[in-house]
Image (cartoon, one colour):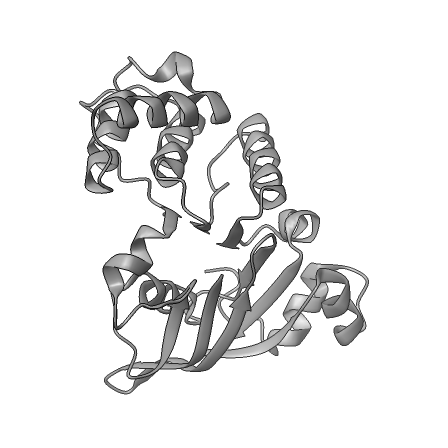
Length: 244
């Protein structure tokens, strides 16, 4: 479970987050949508403990991020928009390094690596260096890194950006399985068809505020539009930044 309660964050005169409240429950996929500059990235940084809110709080399961950031982070698996891989390491070395950061050692670490590699179909990549990997193969390594410590919550920032059709399809299928396993999944995306197909709940943020939330069908009904993309544009109240 991930929860934001009245989170505010300003940078000088720029109000990035204005009383943001949202709830991403277990066993559901929650999409976070918004135009560029809406405050999504700042909100995610507050969740990860990289930025401290000026007021309000963020919780991961029973832990408040500001009070116990280590425990909160241990319950998160994060797939950032930039995968941040070390090209000279093999896929196994990547997973081993991050597994040790999560306290895994020895046979427990080896078993965790083999398990996650089998789950996401990257066993054949384990002994290869990341340099030369396709974008889809890099995504698998980054996703394996996020899942290695078996977190109850997954956070993905535009996970299918740059992926080909088959890699994006594979990721969507995996997320559906993780949802069925009871994980809380929160992700941001600009691909409306993907959001409509995957998300149980969608939160729209514009100008630092939550402007609408509900299922994709609920948002379409609120906006009086048959398609989620048209509903999104109407609900944020502006087209500024959509082409940026």
